[in-house]
Figure 1 (tube, rainbow, N blue to C red):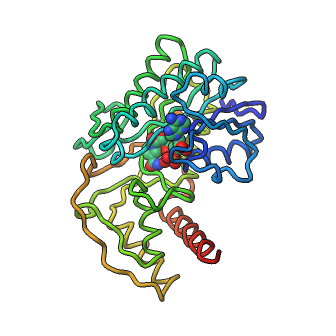
Figure 2: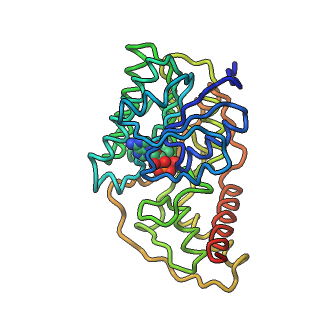
Length: 326
Ligand SMILES: NC(=O)c1ccc[n+]([C@@H]2O[C@H](COP(=O)([O-])OP(=O)(O)OC[C@H]3O[C@@H](n4cnc5c(N)ncnc54)[C@H](O)[C@@H]3O)[C@@H](O)[C@H]2O)c1
């Protein structure tokens, strides 16, 4: 039974980030009160333009900041993190502070407030196991400091549920994409980076042979699942994959985006990709089993990969045009 409630006061940590800003938009459109706690490490306050949220600039690793943000809150979507494998190889302690220490701090405050928590876990918990479809019963096998820190967050969720009776849903996201994902940094997601470079007529970088496959999930589909988990009547700690449930290679993404460029930007050059060595900590195949999400939480993604990619390309095209017009 759904417990969506217009009187909900929801704390969204990392709400100024890519996924967080979409979660905030959905919650606001449902008439809920939204508080955002974000230190803007990778997020951008402008992602929340036009939304009625209470914004607190601060860190999830600060007990005082989290206590201030948790006042009167009955539900938490905990997204704040430094979400990059590459960054975690360079700065593992920063990653640990944001992903692990920050999560304990949020859980402790949620426990005191009696709030329900949805935690943004990561498919990186599964590592690179032979099993084609990753299901929630698999043992965890993190391959990077990022994966380890996100998994530490999950373990704290389970422990807080067991020891303190906190209601938590650990959601494991796969490769989320869509509007507002940062496109121009070395830590950018592959679809955002490809869209940006192709629109600008610059070569994309393909790591390895491009045959690595991902379960690319459009952000609106993901947010639907997050909100279902937030409003479900589950107790204790549930762990659930949230993904579209299909596998697409990096080469396939590139080829599909090339089609969009040739159709919509015939004058723009399409130089050959730059081929880089495979990245450390990268997994080869990532595909979710979504049975638990569907059966337990009613998860039903409606946009899908192909339509999501079309919308995402359209977003970056519009954004590039408006930047060049100013
Ligand atoms: N994007 C994906 O494909 C993906 C996949 C798996 C899991 N996730 C998880 O989803 C969540 C959101 O990811 P995203 O892609 O929107 O990334 P993002 O970088 O856009 O969002 C993270 C947000 O957290 C904020 N933040 C970082 N450290 C903080 C701190 N100490 N205190 C407060 N705020 C802090 C950042 O400023 C940013 O706004 C993360 O927990 C990430 O691990 C994302």
